[in-house]
Length: 450
Figure 1: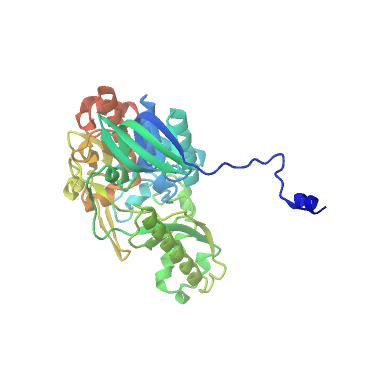
Figure 2 (figure 1 turned 45 degrees about the vertical axis):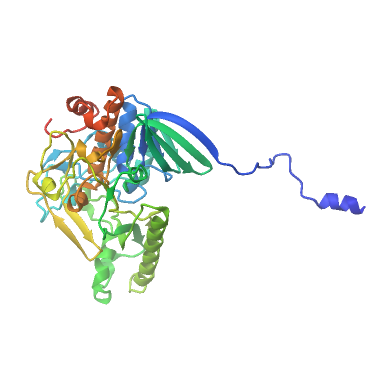
């Protein structure tokens, strides 16, 4: 009886259960023509361009969705695609934005009204999108193009031998070796360039990041602002719906047609390592929680609620490559056009100074900046490009170049160059420029001087 009792008390495995084998990392090896590191603003456009041009394309992304700053970061009004009444950035990025606008029944700004930086500011021409919807559309376009997406993977080693790159990645339960002909770093932090051994540039003091959120549960119009410290007035005002004039397409005040975003600055925010990004997120969430508790002490805000907060801090500035050419502040504000200019950028110089002030310098009427291929190629590299805010530029130029439309244009340009490098079996700096510009126009890109 004693032996029988022991047997009855022992845990049993039911017929539907399976004993798991010990954990082990699954090691895989794949080959591709073009590998894009980072599925953010530039990376998703680069990946779609490369795949649509008919080359084998693989995209690795350390997070769980595509879109980067527009989606995970929460800056869901990418811009700027128009300048001085004309569209200056088109192609695949614009295609994604327009599909998101249409599927969400959003409205577009009146692009025919030219900003004068006084009554009509540059941001009136940014296009509001539903970030979650944009991520879905971007993923669908990637899948339709035939490229391979690998989420939750990051590069740990990158070597170049016999004209090919070998990239080792790690992720959840997997280690992958990817052999590629061309490598495009769209990480935003120049992570792949750094691992590959190329020198990087950055400032000792970088711009603060933003932890983005939305508030509700109060009526701004009924608040007695005399009983609330002035420093909180704009923060409370930003979370209220803009009036009915946004629904009139001819209005100059039709941005944005949804609840505006709000943010707390995260000083020293850096996303270049897991440890630093963790610190930025912890700081942003702590600052937000303190703010909510403070706001709820004001009359009329006792029922204030957190409606939404982004999953991570959006970062403005980390590393840049030392490229074949460094775009300067003077290049940018003068609208210099280079022989190898492939895309446009239109945004004021916009340098956030530790949250204390913002230095802005608006472009003169008719001026639009351009981005040359050489600024996307690290010195002494072969078969390697970057796209996005980590391009080769000085700090002031980078403060404008970093915005989404500019990065989308760069992503498409870099991918087109990589495609031709594969076809001609050359490094991107040696691709035929006439053919490169033609390929970009074929896929909707707007090329300077074309």
